[in-house]
Image 1 (tube, chains in turn yellow, green):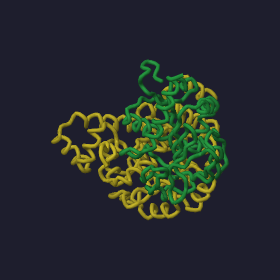
Image 2: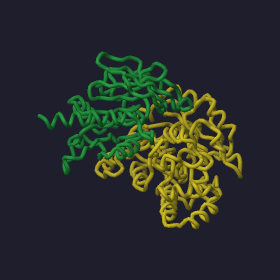
Image 3: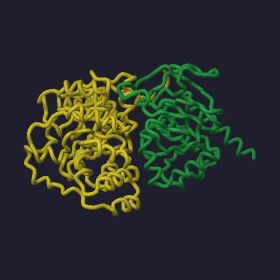
Image 4: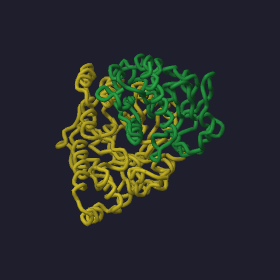
Length: 305
Length: 205
């Protein structure tokens, strides 16, 4: 075909994968993906206008509280949620646990999150996501991490933030790091781009794509610590294209109202009068944790590399 | 029509949720200006409108929250050229199944949501053009299936016998995503032809 924009050719993806895997993620833009632990919560999320749900047995705030090894959720539980809603259903696998991913593909979840919220299964390798038909989303803290995940086949990136804290500070840090990493690439010459690719441990084609286009080649979403409509809008104004909300909705005192408010806030992220309206009618948000109260070893964002 | 420059075609793109960025990029490649539609007052001054892909249930809630459902329906019913893709087709349909849900009721078809299955069944499929339209491929993502065609609805393309591109007057509906096809697809050309026909008509009266 002639006149194909360069943005349509993504290193590491076939043209068909760009359309079907990245194309799926395009459909979620401007939306809210909500963590749900049962059918009832999934229905509340769909009713409020979530564009997808993430089915998991324990939301991050409880994983953090309970400790222990956290794994892929039971397929039965995920299937029950798939039956209950018509929006896409995602589920999480442990970092590097490609068999959990094979299982989730076999039960036809719409998208897999290879997530630092679960206990990593491999401390060296992430899942080689190009082997799968369904799209993956992965977390990142900066541009290098984002590009390593995209090189492995992630069709969508989300900032990690610090899940289960109700504290937006880490998501902001990661989004700013990602944005400034992209900005910095644009000023580099060919030789410097090659050096940067080596530093990031990814092919130079991928680094050059980002330098040429000034953005990631896959949708860039935000996660980890979103508790209020204002938090969601903040991430959108900082450049996120959609928002994952984990504990923030079902750990609050008014999940249905809060879910609706966050959905409206993401669509109208640049309209302070609507943000004021939706923020006004809410009960208490989840309590939230100060980052200084979480020892380095207990921080989830450090999982994955 | 563009308020600042009446010579420039301006297309509204419903920007509540979904792949409206992809439609904007596609329309930009065709050389037309776009504006994002999130509020009723933004429905004036446009020559056509696109209802993008995304989640139809999400868009329905957001149309409701923004009190945009009725103004949008009335504006399209007045003859505004319209293109709906995937979720946009679901919004336009007269009847929606699996599950039943409200819709604008402007295109006399019945659609069944996600009828081709979960994302693992998404992909590129051959589509056959009708009435001299060339064959091509369409990107189907958790696509709706058109299960009934009303009188006055033309079928412009099919996939394995299913209608996937339909037209009723100035309203076009696609079950697939022409906006994700960077090489361009006939769908946007058909839509923009309807837009210029309508503009010519308005200028002549």
